[in-house]
Image (tube, rainbow, N blue to C red; front, side, top):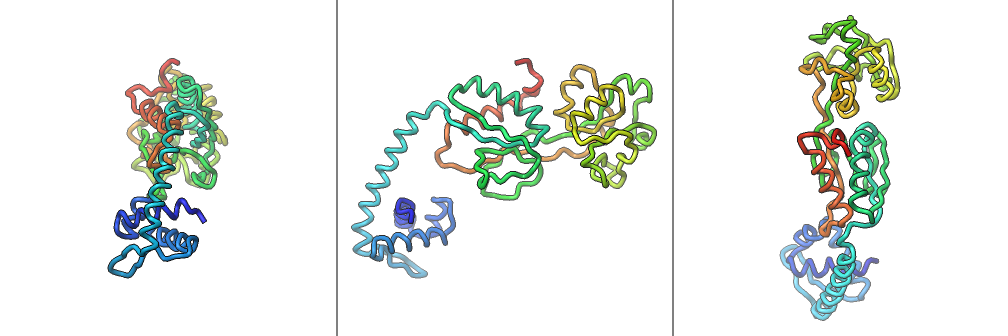
Amino acid sequence: MDVLRGMQAFVAVVDRGSLSAAAEQLEVSAVMVGKYLQQLENHVGARLLQRNTRRQSLTDAGRNYLAGCRAVLEQVQQAEASVEGLQRQPQGVLRISAPVTWGSCVLAPLVARYLAAHPKVSIELDLSNRRVDLIEEQFDAVVRMGALGSAEWVARPLPPYAMQICASPAYLKRRGVPQHPSDLGSHDCLTHLAWRGGHGWRLRGHPEQDWSEHSRLLCNDGDGLRRAALAGAGLILQPAVLLAEDVAAGRLVPVLADFLPEPRPLHLVYLPDRRPRPKLSSFVEFLLAAVVEPRPAWLRPG
C-alpha cells in the first residue's frame, strides 16, 4: 500500500473532521479516503479512528500515531520544497498534443519562441486529430476542440476555432464574388475528403444544404486545398488559422463572412496541481498571452 498517502488521508480526516471534507482537500472521493484509512489501519495493525454515521474520534493508538504522521509529512514537505527551489527555472520535458492544423499553424511557431526563452525545457509536440487520453498517454497538456467531457481538468479557453471561405483574386475576377450561399451552385467549391456525406460546407442559416456537392476537387489535406485555391482552382472553406497569412498578404480574399459556420470552442486542458510545475505553468502563461493579443502571434515577425 501507499503508506504516505494513507498518512495524508488520516491527518486530513482528523484536521477536517470528516471523510468528505478530507476528500475535498485531497481532491479524491470520500470512498477513496475511506480505503486509504482502512489500508493504513491494516498496515499498522490497529484501529486509528472510531467512526460511525454521526461522529468520529481518535483511538489511543490513533493519538500516538498522529504525531508521528505529522512529523513524517512535514519532512516530506521540506524535501519537496528543497527540490522546488532547484526548479524555479522551468526545466524538463513537456508533452503537448494539439489538432493538426491549429498545432502546425499556431502552436509550432509559438513553441519555438517558448523554447528560445526557456533553454532548459524540451517539448514533445504531438499533432493529431484523434482525441488523446491526457492521463493514459501522459500528456502534460492538450489543446482540445469542441465540448469538454470531464470536470476534473483545468480548461483554459483559447480563441474559438473559426472557419473562413476564401478564393484567389484571379478566381474571383474570373467567376465573380459570391454574395449569398445560393451563388455557390455556379462556383467550384474545394472540399476536404473527410467532409463527404454531408459533413462540410454547411453554412450559417443553411444547415440542410451541403454545398460540397458542387466540388470538382476533393482532397484529404487542408494545406493541399489551400495551395489549389492559391492557384485559382476555386473557393475554399478551411480554418482561419490556415488561411491567415495568405489573407493578410492579399493572396486569398475572404467571402461570405455572414454565412460562416459557428466557431468551435477551443481549450488548453491539463490536470489540476496544488503545486504547479514551473515548466507547465510557464508554458500555459506563455501560450495564453500569445494567442489573446490583438494581432495573432503567428502573424507577427519572429
